[in-house]
Length: 251
Image (cartoon, rainbow, N blue to C red):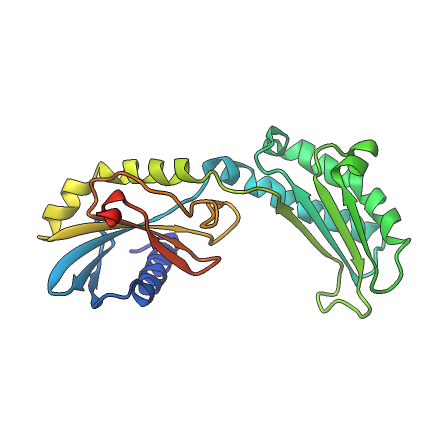
């Protein structure tokens, strides 16, 4: 029996591969979706294996749950203070900071900063926005917060409560993440080729599905990776850009 997580992963792979085929500009179609590699393509009469890999940054993934907890705890505390539903609060944090690795201190920060946010919100008129930078936040004892925005909407919030979001102020690591993913996948390359009697095997790297996939196409514009894959592509779902990044593309 296939697990829910496995089915979700297969759906994600299929969606990314379909997007890849829409953008590649070749006479290519899917012969079948499978495992090791994730699909077999027909490209101008050749059978090409396509392996799919999402560029998830482990450093960010390790703090994701705690940052979500920070947002939910902050919402709970603001509701206790009776912050009206027509307020939106955005809190920018550094997800690479060791501070966010410990759940208890993250929740304690949310409890401690809620009265400060409530006081700032109370000063706003309808439609006004308060922006509080890291210098001001540090002065008030909140050195682990990068930025806060608070806005009083002119009308009620359809959520029925204030909208509270915590989001990262972080850009991806660029080439290092992509090259590491290529090297990891190359360990199974020979098995991919023989399993389906393939002419070539390509690797599709995907970024941009969530903030823990932080490698950004703008930062990797000149990126080239060396690889024993016959081709390596980078798909950024934020910008819908597809680019071939292996050195053979220059030949």
